Structures are given as C-alpha cells and as structure tokens.
Image (tube, rainbow, N blue to C red; front, side):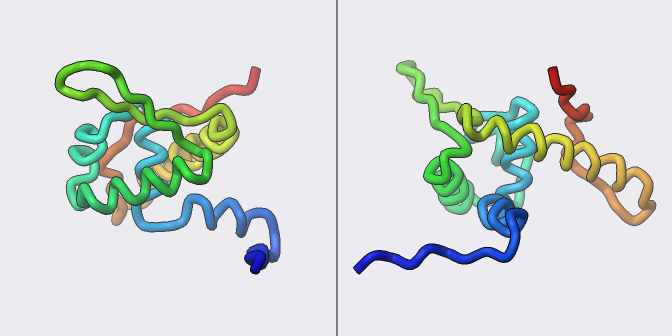
Length: 124
C-alpha cells in the first residue's frame, strides 16, 4: 500500500512541520551561529536531554536540513552542519532568530538566554 501524501493548507505549514517542536528551532539557531557539536548544544540548552537532542538531530538529518560529519579522531569528534539544501532554511531561520532577540530586548518580561548576537545575513 502506498502512503498517502500529507496535506497542507499553505507552504508555511510545510515549513513549520519541518522545524516544529520545542527544541528544533533552538538547535537550528545554535548550529547556524556556529555551535555544532553535541556537547556544545547540550551546554547551551541545559534542559534538553541527550535522548531528545539525538532524536531531533536525526529528524533534521532525515529531512535533509542537517548533515552529520564524523572526524576520524580519538576521542570521536562529530559536528552538525546545514546541508546545501538546508542553507536556504538557515538564511530565513537566522533572520527569525535575530528578530526574536531584538523583540525580546523590547519586552521587559522576556529574556533570551542564548543571544549569539546574530545579524541577518545579507544577500549577495
């Protein structure tokens, strides 16, 4: 039996389906800002468990947003990066991360714990 395709009302629904969840947006923003090792991500997001981080990274790899690069070293060294395809999402997402930081700074009741001081990427 062939699986039925998922149906979405508009394109933004598809986008949100890929990045939806409590941790995926934060993981993607941190990787986009250069935090791309497992331990660094866990340190930046102390409420995130190793199990959930692994699940979220696997989903993003399966969606071709991220790739896992393993370095042949002792101890093992693994980094996560945006794929060529994922770079198109990275540009939009980093602008959204930057907007959120600016917005939080305007709201006295909001604090952003990880503000890598992102600047929206300029198009060439």
